[in-house]
Length: 307
Image 1: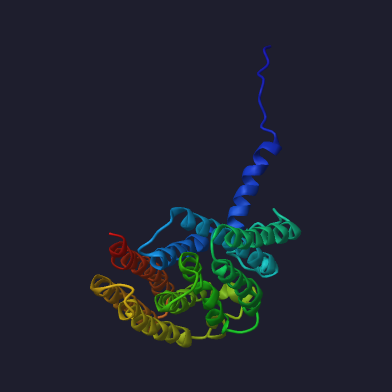
Image 2: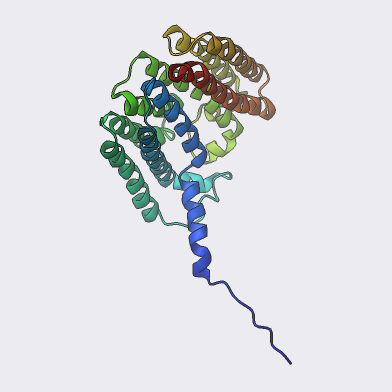
């Protein structure tokens, strides 16, 4: 009887793919990509009307490495809490696919490598300094505070709003009023955005020992709802700031303000009727708002300075 020879794929061949996927998940790519979009907008506004593609590339590479390192160390610090939460139990660390020591080492190499890269590749050290501050606040302050106080979301909004200043510093070496306007928009935007996420996963956060506002407000969610609506109202006012300081013109204002009103309406609806569905409309609306505002800033605040 003829034998059929079968070819087995050695485990060593498939391991790098699995490890690469785990590393990608540890880096929190969705958060990183969103941050790099704001880094790019900050750079383009800060550099206008001059522009150097190599400086922008260096900035994105360095900031991306720092963001990835922050993701690694955030999950290293939260590995025990992640193991107790359903949505995070299959992450690489709680699932046991990578070791805590490996994640700690790789995370630090990525973060400090990115900071060193920014310092070496750009004319001014300002971008590296802001990137280091972002990393320190995200990993060293915000992440531990999630198990201590409900104010962690407000504190965490600071490092979340710093990426456009990394871009601005890379372009100009310092931050002026227009750059701080970008910081203000991102700072306030994160509050309704993350309140909606925390509401959707409030039971999981409670299991993980995370002191998010909806965990404290678990009975009827009224406080979470109105905190979401209130911060969206503040965001609507802040949305006009780029026009006020001359970072963008009427095209931006006419496009961005209705977008802010539309997002506020979703938040008010969530405040009045707190369900999974209305929380999801806030979450999705926050992403549409941010991408829309960034696009309008580029269209009316960046491009006219170059053409």
